[in-house]
Structures are given as structure tokens and as C-alpha cells.
Image 1 (cartoon, helix red, strand yellow):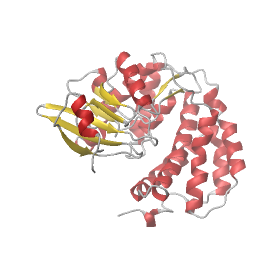
Image 2 (cartoon, rainbow, N blue to C red):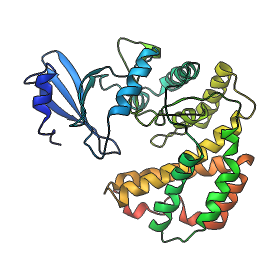
Image 3 (spheres, helix red, strand yellow):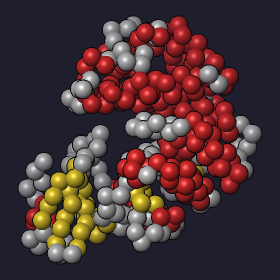
Image 4 (spheres, rainbow, N blue to C red):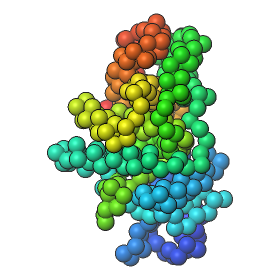
Length: 328
């Protein structure tokens, strides 16, 4: 992965002349990341090339989170015309790999992550667009737009929209507070940082944040697309959050609705990453996503959506229907 041609000049102007630029793992977007090393100093260079990416939301939310006492990367320098942002380096100690190496820590680390969410939800939300019906519908539409054509399945898209319209009022009319929803709060976007601050967790990948229901990020954390969270851990953490936040009685239904919404969306996104962007590795996550979606659809609040899936996507066209395209 070659850094952008303008990176050395940008770094020189930012006070890092001659620094080494080392590739880091990218993500599912057009953004790329590089570690910048200058003697004992380290930082991360985000390459968010326009017009595909706009780093302004990331910068704004990062500053909001830091002001509220959370550990988001400090912004060290930026060139918005080039889409370059130099940010604080939280290191390589991600929550996912830590649990993989030390599974006995799983409950303790997830407890910290849930407590961070509860603390975030006690703060007024950032000045953000709403996570509203139009966004929810656009996102679940990714499943019918990408997954269904990929398996050559014709479905009733208007009935799909109507089914979601029947269940989404649960999250729109909930008595739960409107909070900052980070939207991608999971084990690969949470860093264990040293020295510890703000629950010892560093936050990443929050540029798509919206103002919405508090159950969404809890779903993102506990119904993780990229790792299996044991059901007993999910149940314990859901109970822990409710003990901390005292949400209204409809919270479990909202959690199920947003779980189904998010998991349907991700099935569509991961199929798109294969079909449009040439990233077949994301297909390997689809069996997990279907399992989570089907479990959420079992909640009575999802009955209209569950009926649509039963009528339109047979069981043998779910789970591993695309696995022949997935790399070994």
C-alpha cells in the first residue's frame, strides 16, 4: 500500500519531516491508514481521499468526544483539500485480539465497553443528523439491493418496506433518550490504551455518527459482525447496561428491532463489498450475520419483518448461500 504522493509534504508542514510512513490495515471504505514514525514519536495518517471520503465529520466527532472526556484520537494536523489527517496513535492493542489471546478477560473488557456506552449516553448528544426512518429504510434496503440479486432471488421490495415501517415506530417513539450513536462500536474499533483513560478504551471509526436510540451501539458491540460474542456474555452485558442506564420497558424490543435492522444492513453491505469493491473476504461473515438476524427476528416485535423473510428468502438461500465465492 503506497502512501499518497502529497503525504511527505503534509507531514513536513505538520512538524514531521522525513518521518517513515508504514501501512496499517484499512477498513471497508476508501479510507486508508498509515503509521508515521519519527524517532520515538508515532502518529497515524488517515488518507480519506475526496470525493469518496470527507474527514470533516471524523474531526468534529473526535473533538466532541474528547471534550466530553472520552478517548478519541487527538487531531494533530489536517489538509482537508487532500483528505489527509494526522491523528493520535492508540497503538495496536485492539479489543478483538486481546480477547482472542486472553479469553478469560472477555467479560471484564466487555463490561468496560458497556460502561463507556452508558457514560456516553448520559451526555447530551453531539450536533448530528438524526438516525431516522429514512436512514433506517435506506440501510435495510441494502439487503434487497445487493444480497437478493446476488443469489438471483426476486423479492417483494414494497412489502419489505411496509414490514419495516410496521416495526420501526418502536425505536422512534421509545422513551429512551436520544444519544450520540457511533454506529460502528465493536471489537475491531475499540483500542485498549495505555495510560488508561476513559475506561481505558480508545474509540475509532465514528465518522458516521448520528443522533439516535441508545440500543444501536449496544447491538453493534454485542452482535458483532466479526467475532462471536457468547450469548451468555451478550445477556449479561445487556442486563449490565440496563442496570446502569435504567431504560424504559420497551428497551428489549428496541434492541431486537435495531439488531435486525443493523444485521440486515450489514448483509447487504458485505455483499456489496464483494460485488462492487472486489473484497470477497467479507462473505465469510454472512453466516454469522444471518444467524444473528434470524435470532432477532424471533422477537415478537419483529413479527411483520420475520413474516416477510419467511415468504421471500427461503432458509437455503441464507447463511452460506454465497460461500462458494468466499476465499478459503
